[in-house]
Length: 238
Image (cartoon, rainbow, N blue to C red):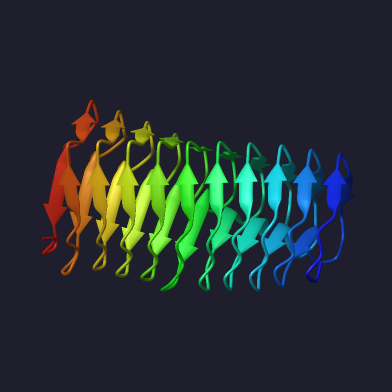
């Protein structure tokens, strides 16, 4: 879609060679109630080159590269979508990608629920559920600065939230529960501000701060009922 609008409602878009739907160059389509699935080498949904648009109540599943990819200034609104059982990340935001993700279910993806990477990458995640993803609930990496508010990270492997390599998210009012490994891990010079989160019943430590240069700030959080420490600081974590 190049600078277009248009409405896609209740379509099945599946088994194409690359991506299911691609939104680019400032386009503003509306996608509602579609199935974007089983694409052979791409994503179910791609936003790039300042693409916009609204995507609601879609099912995005079974895609080879992952569920959604947002990059290069794209800023779509995704609301109440089911993003699950993709072979990559549920959501990938990189290369100065933005995006507002609200009340989505991001579950059972073969990599992370959401991965945010790269300086200038600043997506916002509000009131989503990230559950049973293989490589973590949300990964914030390589100087990105995601905003996470009111989300639930539940029963993910490799932790609920992982912050590393100079990433600096703002994380407030989330529930980080019953994840394998730590609830929140900050490593390799990770930063971040963490406020009023409930970090409970995780398989190892509630919070881990690891490696020289890691320097997050935690204020008014609850860390309880984990199988390890509430907070574990090691390897020159600050």
